[in-house]
Length: 333
View (spheres, rainbow, N blue to C red):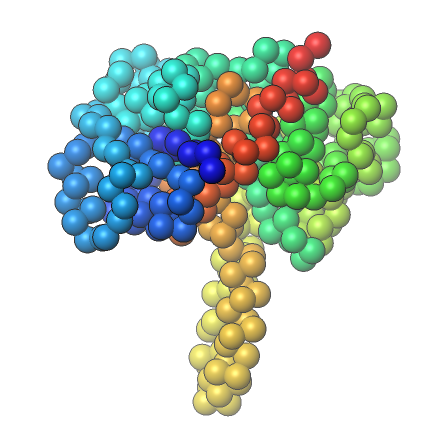
């Protein structure tokens, strides 16, 4: 049984280090293959660890004094804050000390650090940020959702290839359907980017392209891999998250509105809880930054322990399925 070594940024995110440490402890308890290198301010990490019983042999603290804040210019922060938890994690992946990195910290710093420190796979033009999103039939992979707002057609084709590899090898979806996010299903619909990208995807070997996908069909599971540039992708992602939160809030409020509804809520609670859980983005871990020489996973800034845990655990399949090697075979010209 091979060991999966994951560097975790203990100081990134709104709930660090408390929720991050809790998620790490849950992850190493959930899977014996995982060893975590927890980077951040050692006194603060040790104080949180006092709350838990855990296998000390599979958790190592890497002291990092500095913290990259969300509002800092990412390029400058990566260059000047060499003793920050994000930068130390990046170098552990670059130097082969760790297989993957998980952080809820600054998105900009993670995107810059991923490309500048960890580095892109040869031939990859731009690495996309690719979150798993729930739908009626399971899950879809949305890429890009935040890394490349002005992508080119050739880059979207690479996104489709990398997304297909990830969905098949990590999620287990055979022959994943690739859809181009657009304003209509007809081939001639869209802007200059989608019109130019459509025929490239249509004639691309190695992927199962099904055509354009409208936003309203995404929650219904119209495609397994959803391809778009980051401007559209981020809007899709944030809208889905917002609608999900609003619906869950409405359902909970409705169930508590009267005595009859409260009684009914007790009867349906187990089934409803399981259904709502399947639509929670926390259950699917973070968004991998695909196309790098090592795995970098970005979680929500507001991540709680469950998302940190699941983000760490998703690194196992990525490593064991040799995703980077498969991407090199598909992408390298």
